Image 1: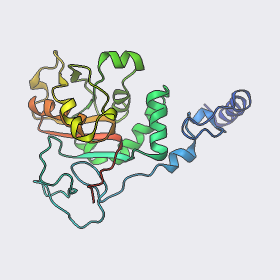
Image 2: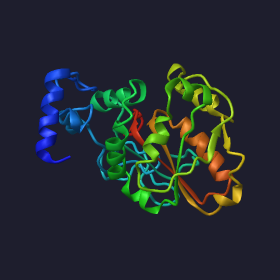
Image 3: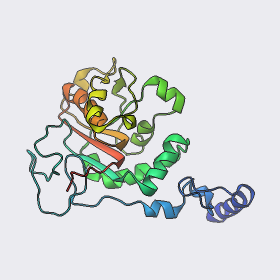
Image 4: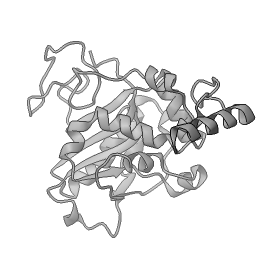
Length: 251
């Protein structure tokens, strides 16, 4: 849309509908640019290096706290703990403005937010995505997908500039991870994912796969998916999420 027409359209929508920002609730002076205002996008606290190679948590300094098998810096929470994930990245912490934007995207049906969230994820995970053969979204159980109307992980994965394959399926409905203590989340996800029937194992053999989800809390869901992809022969499995709940053990 030409700039002048865009301004006219913004003015009409602003006067007639008085739309509010989906994240902060303030008046949107340029609603044609999306349901979230520029101030909110600019207010997102983004992760910056140094970061734990394994989980993506911020590290307190460039001083290496510990090193994984590949020599990458890892946080105390990842030290000495095996994981099917090689690397993880997120835009920032799951709080404040980023949490409000994700809530609007996931629960209020603002699916158009996936475009700008995807752009932010690409910037935060450029190194992972540059090496990837495919991105694989974390699947929702069919009942939850019907209720929500879409799979938020799939919407984000489609915006990352890497070929996407729906290689995984949910084998059973699981209780929401938010309702469980941290030590029960891995058990809740055990056996909850499998390869889709038509996705033959040789198709993943030797490939570098990046799993995609909206939020990582303990990493239990992503690790359960990674185990299935690893068992199918993938050479490397990493993860990209829009946000991450930062562990207190990262320092």
